[in-house]
Length: 431
Image (cartoon, rainbow, N blue to C red; front, side, top):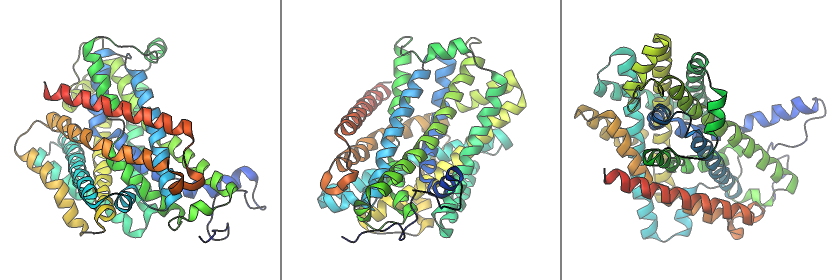
């Protein structure tokens, strides 16, 4: 296999002699960041809004440790996802097609398409609710607007992967700023914060809600997306990373981990802010926050219109960004599993029509969000298990292969998430 030299690709390493060391390294690494921020949007989608606010309103700070634990799991999984893409030069769907039998590949593709549709249902519903809260737009019309705008965001891909990452990261920043604004006025209880970091529950209902938070940690579609973005980011042909010198390989690994740490850390802080705000404002007042509409009205009643608007704007940014990423995921899974592509307009229709139809039928938006998460539960094992398996194979990963302790930790996380999702699924179906 042909070696890749440092002159063939700009990799993080020693800075140019003309630059100060710190600034030179920063300037070289910064352009390589971005893929994890696209993945991070899935961790602050409209489904997270409802779950985190409900947890804070019902149990105060009690479940804060669950969010922290879920975020650590997300960091591990997304680190493996990024490493898989760089080491092999291929995305997870493509590797499944190359290494599994045809019936298995078709089955994986069908469930991945179902996941893409379920993802878009949650995001379009969230965007529709946000437009209704902000401007009184009827939900079906709001869903259509969300779908069209998210489709327009995908146009950034035509200019390369970087513009798309910048757009999605910008929307993630809007979400973060919205909750930073609200958190500033809501305040934080240091004692509550400390107690919430100690693992524990407050009855059976808190166990179920914690299961929902943990079970939704890994969104299967962003595993496919993240594994596809990293090879493009580093412009490495398939298998080229295996032959990189150890210094360059370690530099790439460090850059990936930095990307994941910053992106997942931002998503984790946003999720924690949601729960803290609800705990501060709703827990002792007895205000319910089981729906997005209730959260919006509660924030307006306690903190005023500014907080309510900030929440709705953040929700809209979440719906738009996550919907665009979901459609992009659909493109990746079809190209990877089947080696086929369809026009992005048709792809947008395939995933958006069910969501808009649900809104037009008068279905409750919150129930639609919940049941879309149930479908996502089905998809998690089909993405997570191959990910852990592939990254543990030395013949595929070469020197990038997981350490034994990493494989064990990832296997435990995968087993825990799958078990929690099964428990959540059974609980939801059983009412």
